[in-house]
Length: 271
Image (cartoon, rainbow, N blue to C red):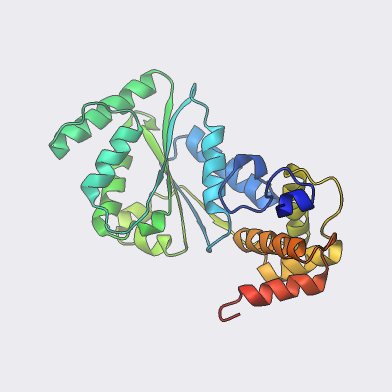
């Protein structure tokens, strides 16, 4: 038996793997998404979303991508997994993401292909949008200059592509490697941790999506998770998942505050 079966759940409610079914839109998420959609629909060129580790940047990026339907947008999500990428790699990757085929070998020719593709999309009435997650990994000035070069591609009255960068707070320092690029940031949003009441709503939402038909976490338990997680979604999920596992192992039909504290202590470094 698994803890899902023990608590009569269809699936695990607190996986940290992004899943749009579990997306919980708090007020700040709705506001950030509205700002980003404004940036996209008016082709502002460059929008930035920063936040601490675990505040939901990746989840928000995937939610944003889901809202960009194929009929109106040529969109893609690019995830940067290390800081050693080159400007040429970024150029080629973005080209392929927006649908450039048979990439040329020389940079000048690739730029020409990109421009032609963007003009084609513009004429089709489609907006080109590239979301870049973990953009704080773009740590070289040459990369910032490459992005600025893309923003110079425009037609009268409109830019031809919009970038939305998601990253840790040091993303702002990286952008500053190319001061003219900083001036191109049209929209900047900051994700913060969830308030205690939002954490409770978040926990209820995920449990409901996972199939909960009865109360598993009391208000006191949810308040304890809110305090111990500091309102950071990734930590909320980690604590919630471990609490359910421990509750199952101890055969607790309902979780209590003492169990949450024990789990959090065990999860702490050196615990």
